[in-house]
Image (cartoon, rainbow, N blue to C red; front, side, top):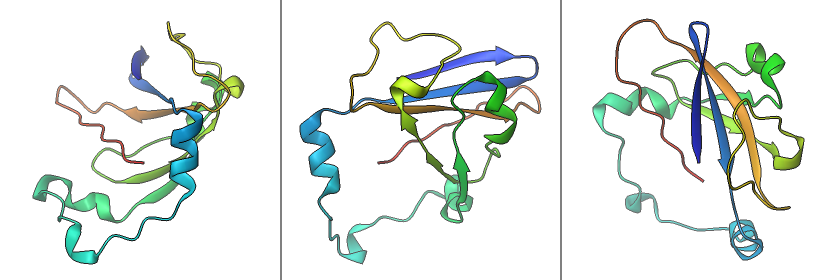
Length: 119
């Protein structure tokens, strides 16, 4: 689930990844994909291949340290969901294996912003 809330001129992006115990076990298994199987990104997303590392925030006060840069890729580390204090609470909170976090990015003006997730 993705929740976006206006905070001044910033948008706080809360990501809650819900996984089941079996999905968590599956993610621990290494996946060997042949290099040819990976399609190149579309030209509009080509800058996403050089990713920065961002640690997500666990509450609103940590958003100044969890900033995403529009147009750039990021690998965002998440926290156990029980440690995250979301600005807007989910109607379906995650269980004991759920992870999530808060990130922010500056809105420069009227535009369309794309947020893409991968596991």
